[in-house]
Length: 428
Length: 92
Image (cartoon, rainbow over all chains, first blue to last red; front, side):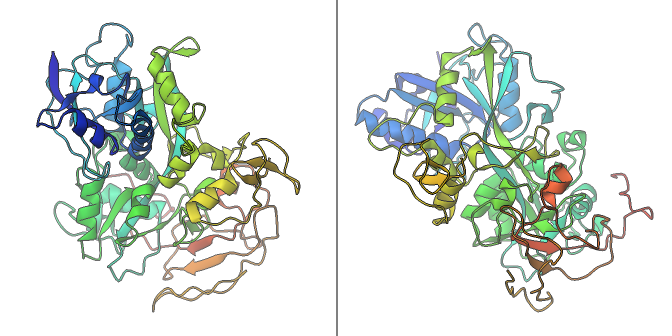
């Protein structure tokens, strides 16, 4: 039996679905590729998934792709913690679905693609009782309500880094360039005028000028913690503001907000795509002497302050997989991980490096990081990637780098020092 | 390196480098500083008089205050609800 639950596919998938099901009826997801990988949770990886799907669709040249990744997008399924909790409940990942542990049944059929994938996504019907192969989350599993520790056989695989930002409408004649953790505490913990943190003095009863998300959102979890709000407080939905329902809601409402107290929260990747509409605020956390932007300047795209630890609000994409010893319980989980890590190149002639795909999606691959953290918006420590990609990151993200180029194989020494990787002489 | 930044009528233009920070690997000594409208202090995290950044950082607090040539914003806002001891009041 096929449920009416809808799945959103990568934008590139639209063509395949249209070809397979030109009528109003959506195709069954299982029929769209030889191997369909089901993922749920955060939508942050949607651009990356879309690019991977595009590579397989192109390779298939009109035939059935060998692999496609399908994102569970039911209204009761999407979101970092929502998808994560469904996945954690799937305690028999290769057996009969545990209660609440699979994406199945009659769902809402709701498709809410706005702002998630562009162009408009296609949908397919998910078979009942389908196990997810991985759950994606912007936040640590223990940040989700009711999770004190990860299930014993769950592995948290770190993906690319996602910064989050406090933003104000660019149209406002605001002189504010920065927000401190203490200011954010009063704005989002007390709310508007009650917090007395000028200029964020929203006097409306429902704080319509504070544009936020919901407690299941990674953006809210991270910005809330950066605002010194306790995790339980955030998980109880107490962060002050108006829940705009999603990134697209924040973008549309905040961009049209002309009140001097207007403020909102966004992922930096979304901010980067809408810099004409918003201005990000530099952030100063407790113990920090100055506030910093994610990038080295307000107009650059180098994410240097995230990469070296000056900008505070960020976290890795978490890719949760059930394990059976050292192997993933479901083989497709490892296939997915290998694509995201670059261990398995994308198919086709001259496919893009997954590292490039990530950078173009405005997230930061681990190889470009010099700091790390193991707690949500917690302390940082130095990180030294074994195969760094600083030069490559800067070239792709900003269009320029001061690094020398090289043509030798990855891992070979550069004549002038360093090691050739991805066409540039990296530090090692 | 100093870089003049126009920030609007109220903001001060700052071209002063942070003088006390010496060069270190990948951490140029100077920084571009934006100054927000001056307010009363609430954040006790101000740099010591003899240093505006940390060379060779190792701890979390040192890393966030490490020397950099990135734009930095100086801000110490007035927050009326801060307790007299500098702490934050409990959430309502």
